[in-house]
Length: 357
Image: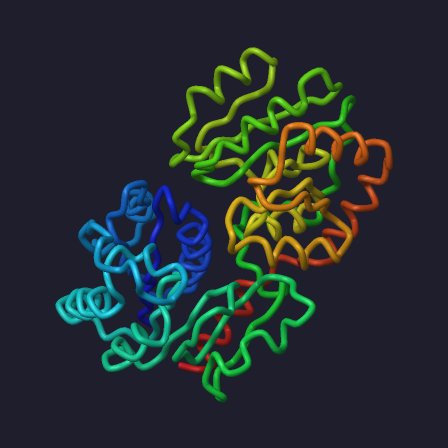
């Protein structure tokens, strides 16, 4: 199959959408399918990384977002242009490539049925990766890998009646580095050990809140900062002052996540990476689109959800750390997490792409 991904990264969007698409793309490539990306050159884009991973990237030009103030959907500004303009640019790039694509896979909160109808004229099959359920789609396959109590009804009237829905952590798109450690026992640490990570960008600097929260506690900690983080130097200085291990833009996240007892982190797709490795967490929603996921995932009684970032203080995190360590049930939480995610999600998705093509 020839498959095209339409996905962006930026300092506002973050890196998670591109990273989960790369996970699926690498598995597709391993299965001898041809993969191409279309991504806009936003500030903080990851187009260079996609190229480094061995994939062709068609670049959409960086654009000011001054024409989309009153546009829908809710995240329309993330596209930086109107959906019609983005679809026209995309269609031109696809047509000039000389490739007959079988599927386009869209992972973008700013794209809905408007864009999809335009692209449907040149690509027969459309897959959407979403977790907001806040806009209509014209698609054949929709993946929402998150846990929701009302999962089966969230997309009612938002997708065509013949659309196949892939819902829940059973379909989580995980990199091999996480899957390979799923059945490996965690080591016992002398002191409670935490991983602090708030995504690739962390524009509100939740990382520094967490670093200050563990001050004077008998906790060993690792802090991971992503490539789009604007506060890298400040965070690194704080880590040195507190004898915390600092990591920047690493390629061994799974190993690190497997070695710690718990995480202090953002919600989002890393939830299922943690669960695959049996790592519970103290979680903050760092963006509006994470709130529903965090609230629902907390019902599994594995993570401790604090709330939205602008309501969280250093003291909030400190109190939850104290409660977590007093309960002394981290190993039970670890086993509970691993039962939620078996690591076979991307294989299930690819089988359906082949079946429906």
